[in-house]
Image (cartoon, rainbow, N blue to C red; front, side):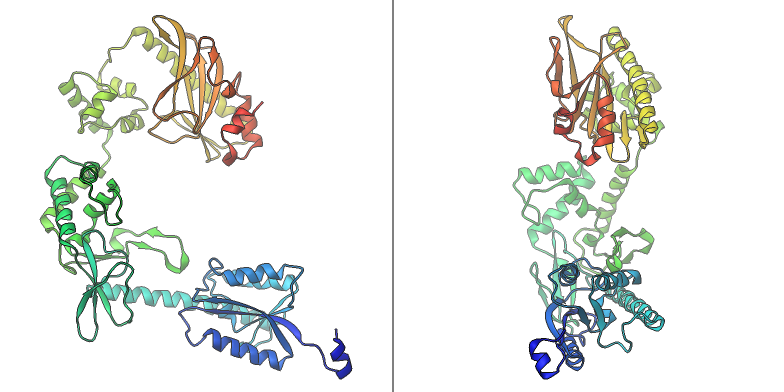
Length: 528
């Protein structure tokens, strides 16, 4: 449409356009100034007026993520108030170096569908719908993606060469170590402070021992762990009791200690390529055979002999005991203590953990039977517990059958009595009879597990020595304190009436009507 001035002079009004500019470190010749100059020349030649400018500076073109300008452009294209009808881009690679060529085509198609045509001003083809143009664009997009892959390979190989020469490959130095800058021309060295980096590509960085007080502390960690019956938790607690902070100025955690004890750089070994995340792919742990190790690359902090002693102890801890080994350890505990219980197992460090026993045998009583131990329990309590277990199994079987018929995917973990529904909701099923005060006044208690995670505790009540179910309580996460016994029913009334139900229909209705991520205390208290 001609403007008033255009109708008088006979000139055609210019077409309104937006320009998109992107620069990363791969093509310095494609600077924003260079791209804008080329786009401006194209616009003046084709009677185009640029009314909007979008720029992503110093941003990779691998994905749309973290490209705010392109994201805003795609949003503006869909807006009814848009002031432009074409989008000018320098070339296909500036639009993006997507590893999937269809992704670049999709974003361009989204613009064209909204009425905004994308034009690549430096490409030797017109961006029309002809078969030749489609082939050329697909080829250009594939070449742009391949360029990033080639650069990634070259960068990785360059890092590998530097590592093999004994240089630091990046990342924090670690407690007790510091980064040292090596001048490529003079060979002079100077320590780098945190957040200081080299300014010249030819300079190199190596690791060196840090402050003396940190070195002494690291050596003590290795000595304590190798020569004493101590754990990473014990070391962290001891350091915190003395008021000694970690490298970040915070309290020591057991994982901080383990990271130091397992790291080979404290014996001067440079290790690289333990993890990988190339071309914006998710991080993955690489097999140890693919790691690059360079011995004696740095000055060691501890001796190899001490480091190997620590690794042998760590390897024994990481090994999961087998069934026969667990039974053997339980027999040793019986010989020392004369009995078996959760408290006894926690008292002896050499004993297997309660969680490990339950995972292997399903329950502590299952392990007791295997080892031939009869706990001194009240016979009536033993009978009640047997009834509870049988009723639990029946309740789980019936509930799983109903949920599967309704189309839910249900898996059962025998050692924890947990049903996993649709790979999202973890429900522990518990059936309990009453406890008695002075032989009368029955009451029921519930305990939220603290050894494993659940989302919902399905608590069913029965009378003593009777398998008939009285009612159900649905406890969502946060309603009970983990690890503590809570009285839920006493003197003929429930202390959690909002969570009490006469049957399991509420569970079925909630799974059918409410998304799993919305299950919370409010949902259960408001269910019919």
